[in-house]
Image (tube, rainbow, N blue to C red):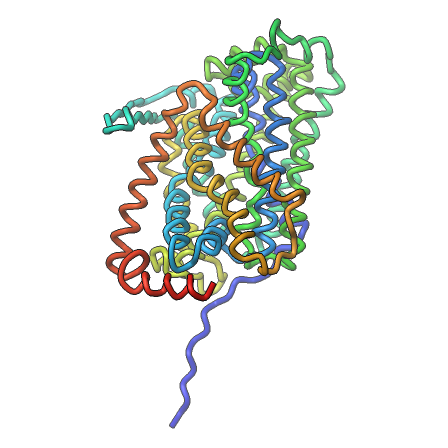
Length: 494
């Protein structure tokens, strides 16, 4: 009798080294954020003391980065937080629910993150074509919810909307290939990012006016209620600007020597980007008065500050070139975000905790193509929202449904599985995890009108719980059917 062999599923390629991992993180972190959010962060605190937002934000990123570094080195597989949360809280019991909720919130937060880069790119394009800012349609929608209050949502259509949609589609096309072809592409994009920031820093320092940069308003550092509320709003924006240092964790199955590469890429990218942010923004404040920058942030118009900055220093030619470079940087962020997040639903589907279609790997190029296409479709939808709303919703949803439970989960894992191999251990444990948790809670509640975005997160959480329970009941998973017995066996074995 002829022996039959089962077909072997295509495997991902471990082709990402330290250099590519660091560059992917950095272009993910930088993106369009620091080029478009300076007016927002200065207006939030009312002066150049807004630099505290980037300094404190960097410390928060380091604390949370150490959480990701330990978990990423210990569990170096595709999926990032999905894999970590599942293992921390029990793969056959509570961890299955929490990891599902992570994937569910990612269905909203990942496209929001990608769309923010595309919208920022389109905003800078309006420097060349002011007509792109003209709105063809704008609508607001509200819904009164029991206990939660009023849920509000605004969307618009303008010329810039179509530019943002086009950039998302282009990123999908470029990523529709195998990972080894993407490594050189990420380095090329990284070169554009570094060149842009380097030029802005040089221009600012060579025309720097310290009196202008540090002309603090009266009472700038008075520890009043308004100061702490302003700092909370500034930290929300800086959190958005720094996020991305963990991008390589979502590509764990494609990283060379992950136990060493992941922690190094995380910490190195945070340190480099923090230095670049502080120097670049101080340089701009030394040329453009903070009062003018504040007016930009308050009006939410003409946020292409770098273009205005370069025009003031060198003239129109420099403004035009800087605008092109910032648009390049924004696209690099869209590219990197889409690459990293497309691997997360893939990992969940392989585990049977998400729709099976997301587990499909391209037969030739060997990448999760269904996941990539679905992520791109979601980002296209969010391109119809305002940038400020996209950033706030993204940060709050991600903190409540991912970052807090993960920082606390690291400490839970240390207790539950002390024998687990950990190629990298958090420095000064558990201080960084506690500081990260405190910082995230501070961002959530120390802001004006902070309940607006929290309502979004709660609605997403409740919808995710309902969907999970229906799926679990149908499949006999925790907390129903056979899942209960499996959970009892797992507790007994521990």
